[in-house]
Image (cartoon, rainbow, N blue to C red):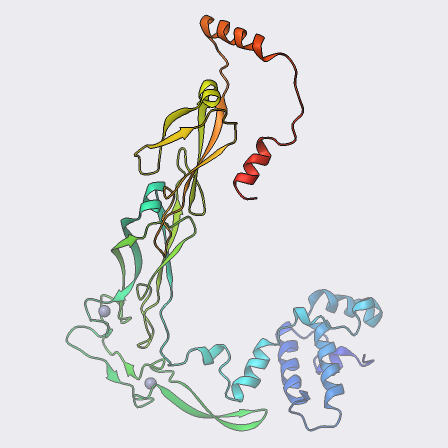
Length: 375
Ligand SMILES: [Zn+2]
Ligand SMILES: [Zn+2]
């Protein structure tokens, strides 16, 4: 912690603007950065500069310092808030001078880059997801301009070799950095690294060589997809830059719910009501399947609510292998709430034979359900 006046440390007047303070700090930070300065007390000086800038660059702290001096800063004193300090441009300058591409001009390199990926949502019915479907999807993306075929030059003209860089797309310059003078190469400012300049731009694309187009694609969605499944269409995204490959198009699948069926992985769950006599006496019934063609199912006598019957191979096809999941039929016994006179008399007769005792149960519906569903 320094005892010197912060304004004095940065060498700025008390009414210095935020920009003055920043540029004074940058100048000093470059001069005294311990990695580059040869002065013996560089580290101490650098700390001092940081401390001063930490206070003076923060309008609130600066105001307190102006009014009350160091005492007004309390615990903040000597603790520059690095989170609020913006070193990025200074480091960029340091690293840029060393030949590292680091944001700024570095990212505008002339290397080919892959085009951006695009995403399109595709909504499917339950059955479409289960059995697969051909869908037409629309995607709006940049395409090679049809007027200039991508050259960016007006029809009848052609791009000219850039005079600044001689068509190399790259210029070299000597820069004065804190490390001394360095040879630095970067993208040509005249042609932005293309090596060519367009003297009369294509009127359709204003020289960009690209035009916005909505294209329709027929896509075959495989059987077994579910909400959240992504299907990649390679090379259907945005075009690459400087000859880089085209990006990908991702189809993000969402599936509507079914009226009866629920999916659990590749199995289909179906809640099915049977009546009391079917549960008690047993019955041969027909159960709906996702195909729409009913399957025969034998309900044995004495079937309890919650019993699950498995119809093999009537579930959802596996996405990347052969075979299908199962259909699980979860039985509910429908207790009639309205009876005809005749039914009422029959139930009363039945009741007389069944007695009136009740008994607690070790296992119930939820246990069955959990066991049957494996968890
Ligand atoms: Zn064009
Ligand atoms: Zn150039």
